[in-house]
Every structure is written in structure tokens, then in C-alpha cells.
Amino acid sequence: MPGSGQWFAVGLDSGGTAINATVIDSAGRFLVDGMAESPSCVLDGPDKAIEALAWSLDHVLEVTGVKRAAVRAVGLDTPGPVSANGVISSKGATNFSGPEWRGFDVRRALETRLGLPVVYNNDANAAALYAHYAHFGPDDAPRRSSVSVIVGTGLGGGVIEAGRVVRGAAGMAGELGHIWIPMDGLLNPGQPVPICNCGLSGDAESVASLTGIEKNLLPYWLSQFPGHELGAAGPVAMAAKLVRGFAEAGDELALRIFGQQATAVGRLLTIAANFTDPDVYFLGGGVVEAAPHFRDWFLGQVRENTALRDEQSQAASIILVPDLDMAGARGSAIAARATCADAAG
Image (cartoon, rainbow, N blue to C red; front, side, top):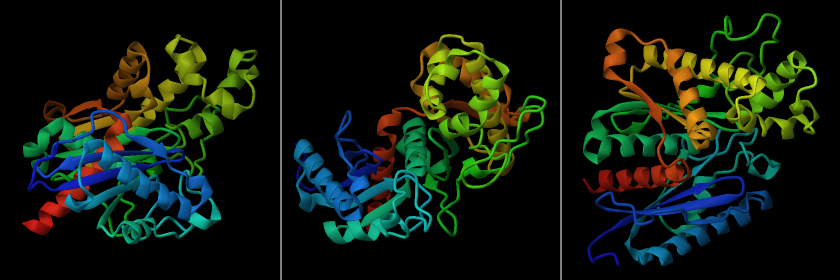
């Protein structure tokens, strides 16, 4: 049971189907060991989604025995693109794509509903912040920098400098998925240049994402492997979700796809090395949750395709994001706690 005199911050990670919640105390200790999940209701529109977030907060406080009066701030994350102040893009965002979400100020709406300060980050930034603090610890994290690449439906990213998220003027710094990367040597001769949903051709997300597999890589590689089992696995969107399992089993077509993805991530980290020169590079996403032998192979391929100078290789490392399922909520809680500490200090 929390002691008297303590204060707390809550982290809420809202996705397409679920909210994951956590609580952090004033000393930086998490009170939730696993997942505290509840439905996000985002498909039902903003009003019901905000109520779902409010319910999630009440639920996690009940689970941890924390009184609401002891909560000083709430951290919130959602998929981007979203402004630094928590206003969803006028074109919508991943899993928040309905017309009613476009231009919706999700941070302010939750703040009004809760009557508590709400600190917003996009989900990739929140995960990057947690990875940073989990790796370096609370004492060393404010003196360190990191870059995170999260490969999922899209490709999310996060840049941490001196223990804080680099947001940028419009809140869209760290959108690593939309950085152009060299395609020479990555694509097969005659392979079409991949196109991203954002409209760019040849950015990192157009290759290193589930969407990249569905839209660009799988259709091409099926043309190179006529009669492959994945070609008869139903619509390409369904078949794309099966590619990782085939790669884990050593299937050549699937390994070609993930080899191209690893090359893309390595080239992206090479750009980051010359731009931010961080202490550590984190890699997260579905490959983290894959079979260990495949995960290690993929990480090795990323390292082989990341061109670091000798001095950088000695100073930095490329490692996996820890506790990925909880990383968003925990990163959001860390951001909210830091805001409270700043206000008190």
C-alpha cells in the first residue's frame, strides 16, 4: 500500500483496441508489474474513447491502492501523427483514422475530463523514453542519448537527448519512418521502388513495416517465387501477417523480405549515427517478440548494415527495446513524473 506523503503519476497507452495503464511513484518506482489492460473504444469515436481512458485510470488506481488525490499528472500516448500538444493530424492517425478524430485535441479532452494535467507523447516516443530509462537507470538517463526504431504496422521512432524526448516545433521530430534511405543495393535489380502510405517513395517505413511487406515487398517476392505457399494464403494483407512465421521456419522468400527490412533499418541507424551520435540504438517491434534464433539473426543483420565509425562502435551499442508491451504506458508515466518534478523543482 502506498505510504503517506507520496505522490504519483499515471501512464495511459491507448491503441486501436486496448489501453495499457501503469502507475509510477515520486521515487520512480512502477507499481504495476504486468499489463493493466482495458478496451480503448477508439472505433466508437472520441467521446467513448475519452470515457474509456478515464475508466482505465480509475481501474489502475484501484488495482494499486493509490488515492486519486495523490495523482499529480497523467501521461498519455497514442499512435501518430499527432502534434506536440496532442492534436491528431488533420488526416487522421494510425488506428484513429475516422473523420471524427481528424484535428481532435485528445490531450485537452482527457485533461478536461479528468481535471488533472495530461502530458502527451506519441506511442513511439513514449516507448523510446521507457527504453532509455530502463537501460540507463534514473540516475544516468538524464546524461545520455538514444535513438529508437519500432517496426510494427508502420515504423515509429524516438530520439532522446539528455533524458528527454526531442519533439520538434510541430511535435513530429523522431518520425524516423519517413526518412529517405538509399535503395541502391537494398532492392533487387528490377524491383520497384517501394511507396509509403505517406506518399514518399523509398523511405524507411516503405520497407521496414508490416505495411511495407503488404504493399511492396511481398507482392514482388511472390513474383520471384511462383507457386509459393504464401501466394495461396488469401488476400495479401492476410499473407503479410504470416511472413514472420515463415521466416522463423527458415523459408527463403520470407528471409529475403526480412533481410531487406534489416538493411533498411541499418541504413536508417547509419543516418541517425551521423545526425545525433547517440549512446545507444534501440530496436523494437514484432521481431523482438519473435523466436530467439530469428530475433538474433535479424538483429545481426541490422548491425551488419549499420555503418558506424570505429569511435562510435566503441561508444555505442544496438540492442532490443525491453518490455515492449508495457513500454508505452511506462514511458508516458515517466514523462508525466518528470513534468511534476520540474514543476516542484
